[in-house]
Length: 78
Image 1 (spheres, helix red, strand yellow):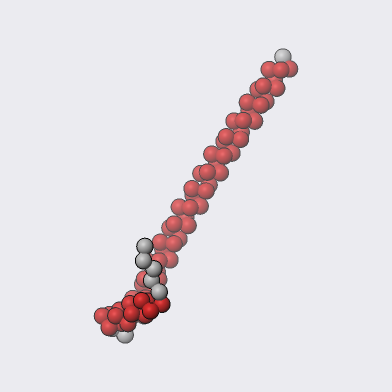
Image 2 (tube, one colour):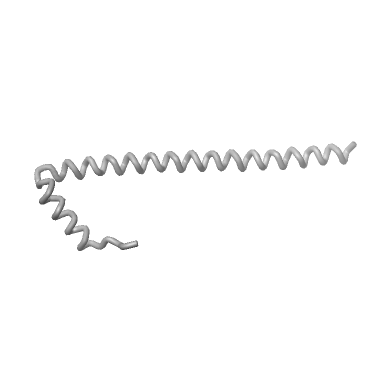
């Protein structure tokens, strides 16, 4: 996968300024920043939900093991 260096970014910015215009360029950058922030927040929310689901599943498995251990201990007492 190709990497983008500083020189390539500079060329992209210059071309974008020429196409969009220097007057509207800050507005476009702000809008792109808002989109990126929205996407980042969305993915962070999905990641936290997946982590929470994983924790719930782990707790469920631990409780099941403890329940089996308690049942085994009760059987031994009888």
